[in-house]
Length: 258
Ligand SMILES: Nc1ncnc2c1ncn2[C@@H]1O[C@H](COP(=O)(O)OP(=O)(O)OP(=O)(O)O)[C@@H](O)[C@H]1O
Image (cartoon, rainbow, N blue to C red):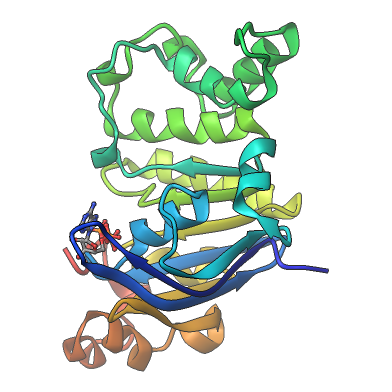
């Protein structure tokens, strides 16, 4: 079976000439949760945006389910939960509207929601405990609730590939538990999940695989037990982490790399 996500030798150059990714490779199968780990500015969001088809590689190729990205875009296969900083929270839309956006790909040109669309939005909001907030403007939510809106949008989209950019930053423990539980359920259904996080202490319990990113490329990827080693973590964050080899289990909620 082909991989769900296949990033092959991808290089991304921004219009200002900055090489954000150089020859990056990443292949993920169905039913996998992969943690993407790297310092601030290492290229995690760039990788997400290129898998979404928002950034066109300068060279290399990206495939979803063996097909070019535009096919996946048409079918709504890939959902993206953006970093909070990338969202305009003042935009005059309600929680319900944002989650309904996940259904747009399935609607006609006039974007008139069907009964099924409304049901899917309702279910998704229930799943993330936000139904009672459905009429709120999105800026009037807590950090955890804001994340949950976009997770609900991904659920309503019925996407089988989920990309989550820092879903645990600025959220309370209850939201983190809710999101991890939900992602584990989706994994059991065969979904493929790529998640960037600075919460290293939860990686071993939560991620089957990790992909480590530094020096503009994915320099290691594989099973968490094999790749999430103190030596590799030191390559990502600097040698001082070699002095704390169990940081991954023992640290409190440190935002390493910030
Ligand atoms: N639109 C842009 N134009 C030029 N350079 C950019 C642009 N967006 C990002 N970059 C640069 O590309 C590099 C990778 O950025 P990216 O946002 O992918 O990093 P990141 O790993 O997601 O960081 P963070 O953890 O802070 O979100 C950085 O050096 C950044 O300054």
